[in-house]
Length: 175
Image (cartoon, rainbow, N blue to C red; front, side):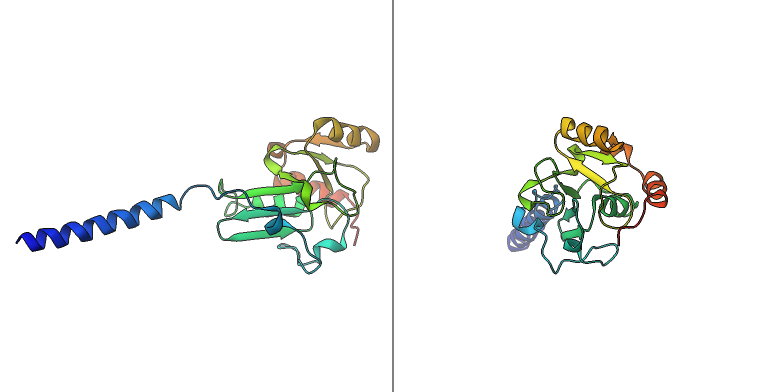
């Protein structure tokens, strides 16, 4: 009988350890590294399938525990993320800081958290298909672009599918 309790105790302890490990896996994934997020000439947009580096302007990346999805523009990324099945807290969203990058060749060393970024919509800048969202870490840089080009500054919480759809219908396609 003692042996039964001893073996049951070991099995129960093993189950508890496994449950603890599974529970640990539910935490938010660590921020993705620059190497994982870097955009390469062979990368295709997760939404439209176009080659990402063929277009000017900022790009987007969504990092989850299962990997990184890359997008040819912040608008494509947000259109994907705003879908109910993708709109989760465990998705890390990244965009280029265009205050520190050249428009035609954004620098992957200057990727920022999209949740803290400033988005300029309505600029006359060319980008990938659909609405062009210029992204900035600094509000003054975003306001300057908006002032210079007639655009307006938004935060992530201001952007929804309806806004992306309306803006896309009004903007010329650049490819």
